[in-house]
Image (cartoon, rainbow, N blue to C red; front, side, top):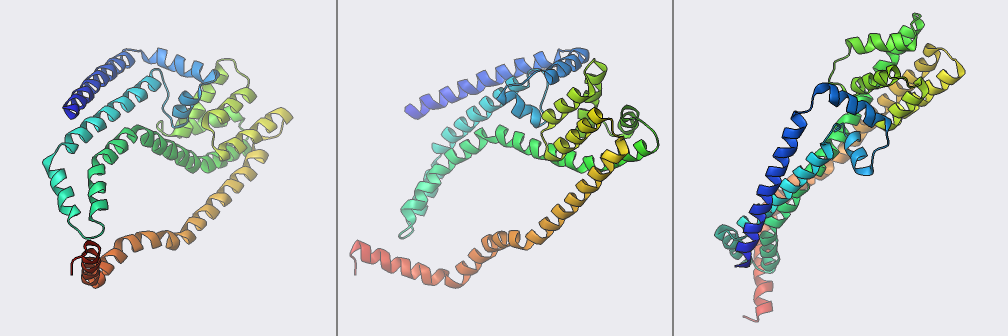
Length: 298
């Protein structure tokens, strides 16, 4: 009876979460593009809360994004709860747990693990939005770190050709794909400068908005060059060379660490099968003897 009540409550939560998420999506789609861009610019000028900043660092910005994320968390949690309750009342699960319980010595522990699997799946489903945001942040950082060395080299080359920072940045962004994260951040930087902000403050906001070590060092160098009046090329060229060298060293370190990383998958995938094939019958007989001794049978 209690499982039925819990199932009804889980379905009600799922329906309410779905209705709330649909309302939030309709409200977000009804906003115009001009209002969205203006809100993006205003959000970049103000300080965000920890939760909103965490989403913004992963590239998830805009009006209503925290509400949509919370709605997704609620939907996944309700779906996981309903799935766990449905699976927990399934005869197949209890039959599998009963079959596993017949194994000697470790059967009771394995049966408990089998009965806990639906709740483990529910926890994994509830944590799915957080994992998606973490993966988006990792992809965001990787894309920015891939584009930054080439961007600095092009800016340094254009600076050596006589262009200023704004003209060189315009040339680069005109040829840059629109979907790249670094290009989007730099376009927002241009919008802030055109909106009346000083270049140093806009650069500092750019570094805080991205929060990547390489970008922070590049921004610090550009701010120092802006304040001291140094040339663009003589600041960006050494920085681009340093970032390229760091990238090469990081790639070499990953290549050298690859054999150690392959040890665990090889042991996990190959060694259990080998042990079961060679020592499985012996362990089965040993478990039978230990089980008979523990039960007191001859």
